[in-house]
Length: 311
Image (cartoon, rainbow, N blue to C red):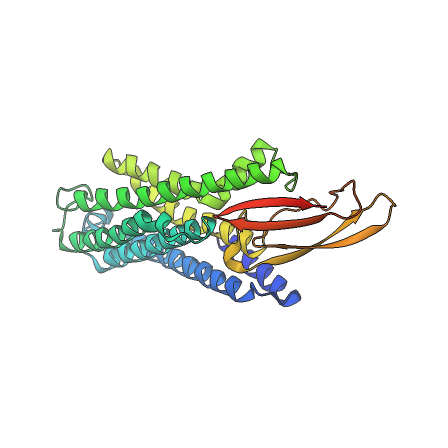
């Protein structure tokens, strides 16, 4: 995750220095989110290392008693960091859904309510663990309802947003494919990979595994929890990189762009066409037209692209 994070920072910052575009400020905001995710993930890992050292080297009663003492400050700090990380990640998913759906606020009403529920249940989890008596495990009745609710609400937020984003991405790519503006849209594997990357589907998958393991009272949930932290970093690094480089299926939030196409005419003379689009799309620059004067206009109405060829 660390390698991906710093590689993304280097790539995006290098591009920003080469091109002073209107999206630079937005890219910097995205990189700020990426840095916060990395800081929280690193803090979670550091706390885990500290707890392992304390359990095996410092705690008088041994590692089992240490890990069964849920009210320790280090455990409270670990839960707090994880809660902040998931709230930040879920907030980004909700915002991403809002952007992909052309900033239609009603699309994210339910996800926003679920996000608030995530914050509330997360606070409940932290408090219930802090109040637990020593010698208890994480599956006791005092905390299990809070943990189950927290993971369930987080999962619901991500599944809903993932589904909405995936639907939008597939719809856009199918439309672009129908007008031959996206060369890769006809490849099912590539479309699947784009959907997975842009919708943070791997994060939702990790939450499903965590939910199942915790419901089964399996200690493997500890491993799943730590994997989820890394998954958050990886998933959102891929999203931020694609958006910052203009490779996402919908980047309307970061301004319009202009593409210049060289379109050969019937007299074999090339003409420059300036194409203003409200979002960044994959353009087939080898696209040719039969007539000498064709103008490509891209309009955005009600969140859908309508392409017209005017003689």
